[in-house]
Length: 319
Image (cartoon, rainbow, N blue to C red; front, side):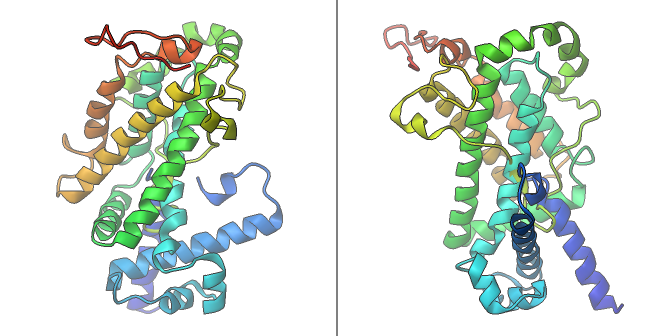
């Protein structure tokens, strides 16, 4: 293997770890067929190749044909999966986003929603916990590329929007009265055992990934489902959330929480602060999530209005 090949191989490996860390891997999809798994693997391989080339040569100097060649597929195969070279980064961005939602879903049952969100941030964005430090630098570089490309920004934005929908389903499930009953016993035991994560300490988990599923981009950021289709009509979120979890409140809470983490990662990426420092994405995101400390989650759970502090004459309703 030549020096150039070794460099390319190392870059591809870093990209892969990077994808695991942004805002699941294709294999995480529930019950995919062999054909679906192969398609997902091909999409991810193309995404990794694109990330590597974008980082090495720049977005403008890289053609879709170059990406196809690097991924070992024909140009027509590339266009079967993606309409443009920018869209090729979609699987990496989406993978990163899914990881955070998964971490919220897998947070200890006894944690409140705000603490579950904080717990997930620590577990998915802390270098050395679930994401490699070098992968975070890949995330930084790719987000900087996106900042200078409207087409790539759109791909990033779509991944974040899909992640928000997934987070909505996850939050609806955590707020479900059914879940409360089934997991009542867990509150007294497991909760505090892992609860320190909400204060910025992670006890053994792993961050969703490294910056870009399999490649160089923030890959695992949101895996899971999405608010049911009826949500748009104002009905209660189905997806096992129970009839009293109001859609409007869940969607709003998910939007704010998603923005808190997205902005934290983006602002960190725009600067030069180390990922594990006091101005890294984790401290930034935890600070932003404080905005949800007084969010009326009880009103979301029951669908009943509760005045927001300082706005008694304008009660917030989520029914």
